[in-house]
Length: 444
Image (cartoon, helix red, strand yellow):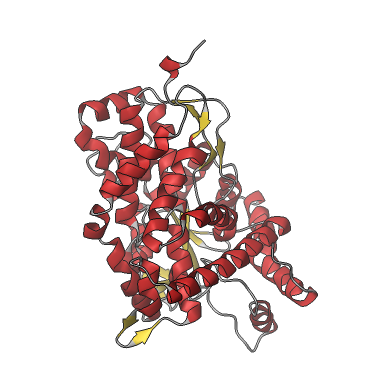
């Protein structure tokens, strides 16, 4: 783990205070006073949708937006789509006023902040024209056509991973399958050597809470250390690709140009790191959530066995019903209107993807998991607008191949006691999911 000297530690303490300690205290206090945004923050820590659903119901009574003490929040499908598509609602943080003491403090603390998914020039927090340029350079590898060419290889990887598992004994399917399938696929796309893939998995798991709000000091230090270590590894990997380029995406990004302009070293590391981490982190959640849902519902499994053409729709229903990402945020860059509601410049807006996905105005009987649902694809789990998930086609394909391969080989797959949800508030999935693949083959 990278060690920091006293001055960087002080700056890290300020980053933690402004980004986690103070917001956590304020939102908990707001929750105690009945603020629905605060209550959602507290409920999301439980990791179970059952804790969140009552708050979603109350939020819908304030359609399209609930104006909380610190943010405008929506669980309304149409309003969340409008928020995600608004040209005046950006994903970046509004910079502090450099003439104010707080603005100067923010700038001082950000001097040596590690590159992460929520620090510029990440695709998640940049806006056009930079966002357009970064996205165009990497989008070709994630096109539907390019993804379909990976289907055969993904199928082979899934089958090989299942071959390695003892089907008669309980196994953590997250560790042995859900994590390894997407990380292997994205590692091959990006030219990551096989010996480095376990390291990339550890980086991803350690850095995943960087998307969260309200981390403890210890969690925050662990996340920032993981981001620094990932940055160092990525720098070495990119340098290796400069010396010995291959046919992978990162080799192409090293020399790629758009209108004669390439990526700077910082832009290259930020873009490559995000694509690498995002290329497997959320898909791990999709696979684990899907396995848990289907294992618990034999009727849905039988439907898929009888009608395998439903598998693509089943993946979208998993994404709708138990999304890998719970919510997303935006900040207005001007006085504007979103879904007909006036919003002042600098307003923090929260779109609850899980709420939009269970909006009864869009999805009849939304609390029912149904692989035949006609409009399952109308979910917003991949966001919308200019920040629509770059890897949506890849995630859908991996979800379909991964889930179908597992349940076609082991149709009676059973979840055992001991499942543990991830502790993150934003990303939703399983830390551990013990299963028995073939209970009938067990020797008593």
